[in-house]
Length: 224
Image 1: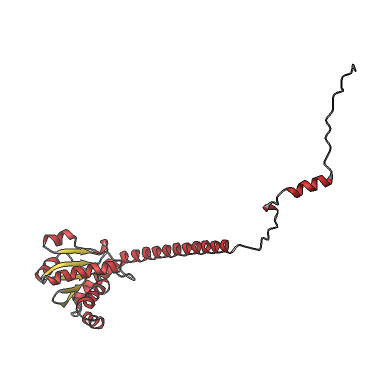
Image 2: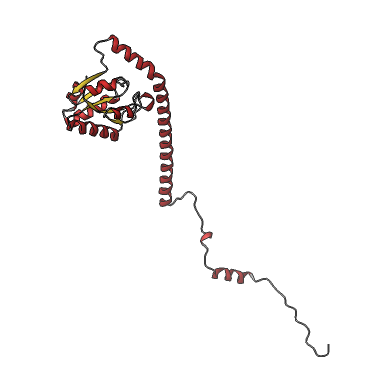
């Protein structure tokens, strides 16, 4: 070999079991190695889950209630459209046949309560001293446009309210009551009407009387 050192061969040998165990002992314990009990739920996580479930349930209930209300409004609206002219004709015939059935009645010196007016009634209302009209009909129920009232110098407040099973909202009631009171404070009469003068318009008049004049029971007696 000429005195040269022979090439060294690297040999790899597996660690002894005791070396491996000793090196494993030096490593810090891993959190993932801890045993996890799936039956144990953290209280905070449980509360968050319960709140999310309750919120989801509430949203579903709210959406269902809104859907039912819209369906009810649509059904009642369709019925109101179908019944408007037949019931209007019935009221017209009844007013001609029955003397006690009048198209409008004077509640006090500033309030006239009645049914939906026709165009020919505007002149009569003006002669009675009416300077304001509160209409609680939907557009398809309204027979006199605002322009006709304005041409006669009559203020017109329109609060569209669906007939049958529906009443004016608190905001609408307050607006109508203020309108009537403003006219009354100036010595002017207001005509309040819906289709027949028995439901929506009567609600407004009762609220006005209860607020500015007399208590609820006597206000009810004044209407009936």
